[in-house]
Length: 293
Image (tube, rainbow, N blue to C red; front, side, top):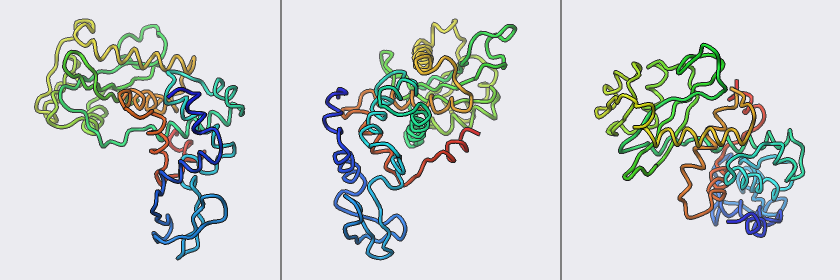
């Protein structure tokens, strides 16, 4: 879907509200407070008032768009940009949409909070695991040395003929087994064929994954798919900022993986994002500060 086609479809407040209402409720209703299924018309357009507790709920209530102070078409356009463009900073979005940079940054952070992994789709088949670092070169800090650079654990589902399946990236504090193994167990099926390099932290991985094996890295030549994904991720981050804050890095990683894992979807990624953002969950500034702490 082109940006012109998207704005033709969602260029008015009414069109956006109707889409949210249809996706949130359809022909049914369930009060978010008392779970009553009977309602009448509410105070404003498309609001629904619970017959039992009299709670008036709008189509944007308890969603990504809860309490948004600017028009919904602008909010929808931001969702479109974050789900389709490789790298776009809050300054660029603010200029295009016509809001302040601070407002753009906060809403973009809210959108990224809905781009995190649900944990429902575990990687399967052959899965390559490796780490990389985000940040510039540091003297006397080669390879996996910990300095100002930020280490990231990457998992990539490798299919036939070098094709890529799903990808996950997680900011990690160090390269120890106690840090890495729980992450892998939460993202990879236990019967997957996990392939890593010869780094010592992976020497007990076959206790968690029976088919796990270590392969000596030939300067990355035998992990081409993994290194391609690492380069793609770093390219996306460079498009966003000259410098990525450690507190918010995971949000940018989630955004990259969200787009990558939905690249073959028939419906536009932005529609999947908006539907995912309709879960009963409020993401406000207090929440963003908590997850960045």
